[in-house]
Length: 151
Image (cartoon, rainbow, N blue to C red; front, top):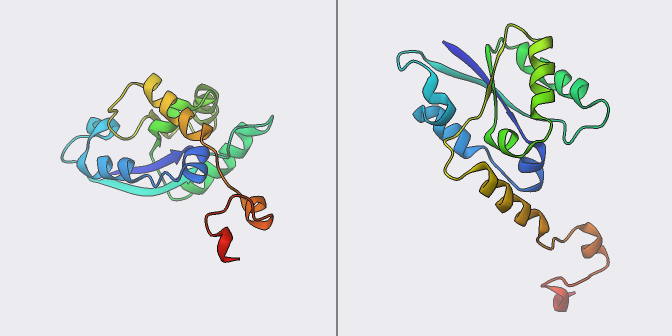
């Protein structure tokens, strides 16, 4: 039985609302990176965790600390989500740190089936970050809020 952990991009999950639904669906259907597992081998998803965000000097250390929480539950394979594979400029640094610290865990780049090129994906995600967004300051200062007339 393959005991799998998934590492997601913090920006994708926390800022863009990725629910990992595509990763989980393709795990169940054995598509994308999960198609490499033998059909007769059960797949056990042990857990999903976010990266620590775009790193500071301690980025790899913060990542390793988070991954330890999965290793305590005996994962044998860690999948880096497609968003990490396609978007993260630190992926190779993270892979080296993971393989060095956890040599018994196989690291796989990718999860769900890729429907567009990584370049197109990066462009679309970049467009999401460029959209004007509201935050708590806008609420507090009552700026350009749709229900402004009701207050």
